[in-house]
Image 1 (cartoon, rainbow, N blue to C red):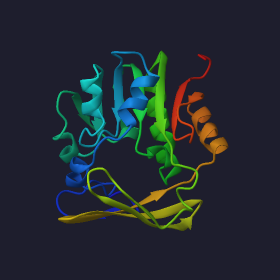
Image 2: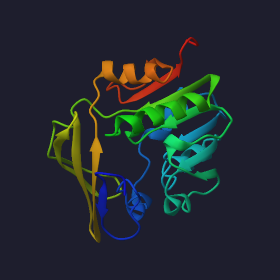
Image 3: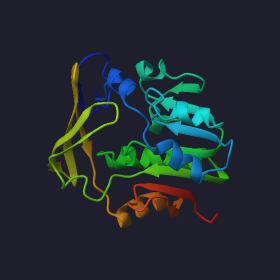
Image 4: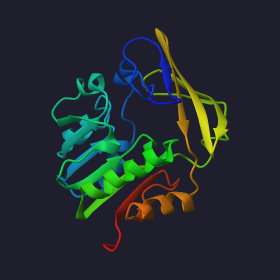
Length: 228
């Protein structure tokens, strides 16, 4: 387990507390549409933190080529139709570049600042000179609008139960996922980032915002500095 992360519930639990069987049940949502609208048709996408392929599979159906990376072999065994690589994202060194690099699932908010730097450096060294990086950020009220819940289309009640400070600007977030036949929980560390802090983190890795893709600022298209 990564420090400060844990998970409970049926089946395998990954180092960041995610439950493999849970993510097999959750749908992709709007993510594939947002991604497809922001990148060239048929692009080769490096998906960092692909999980079970929840977004991978819809992207493949839309005609994209995907190289899917995750540190969990249990997650990767569920991915079909994509090249898969088992590795922590921050350690990835493929020696090749891609039209699109994608860092979703709020991974940019890693509680450990060095891990976040490693994630963004991986994005920067794997994106082609004329390519782009797509990043999913937390919403502005993510850590203050708690507790809260929503019902997922898959029939799951998703609850963010708490976000408690643990020092150095980091919160310990506890989430619960309730299906009629099973319940999973995940506890993980997350660092809230203002827009300014987020853009500073990009700049540190040699990236800059090209545009915000959604009105809430959650999805961002970034490029290598000097290529806008």
